[in-house]
Length: 232
Image 1 (tube, helix red, strand yellow):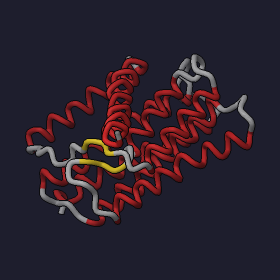
Image 2 (cartoon, helix red, strand yellow; image 1 turned 30 degrees about the vertical axis):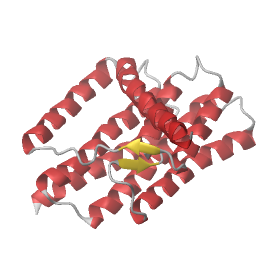
Image 3 (spheres, one colour; image 1 turned 135 degrees about the vertical axis):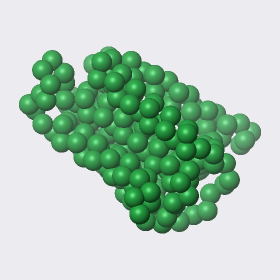
């Protein structure tokens, strides 16, 4: 029984971190001195993605996949990578944007994420590929951009949010690594990696965001480029 619950525990931790991120970004009182709540919320979402990457692989490694786990994972992803990143961006970057535009942009992102997940759950995909940019990648890219909101124009960030929203519901194919086999030993190594990532997040928060941001952007650009290439 405990073995079957292990992957779901990581999924619930993913959901918990997403909720904490939302609470943090809406709280004006700093949790840690000299550390902005919004930046901390962004980093928490990035860490949440690591949890999300582990649960499914653990389920396959332990041979305990279930429809319950699949649905729980999707519901958690909507909060952690849809609602939380959208709220973070709204709070830190859209202060100078037209309120109506800010509200619509903020709402569109999690809505497109929910549509992307619903389509994933009910429509049989193409083996080896995701159809549309996965919501964890889109959410973490948005959160990482939020960390640099002082260096990037608010309207550029609005455009980035809308672009990511479109890519989630698009028909663009992105490589899937879900079928990569993971042994129990590799699962333990993944847990060690998460622990190291947590230490880096606390000691060097900016470095963690940049390390994850670069491959995710390359992933998003790769899928888009290959999509255009196939249409030629």
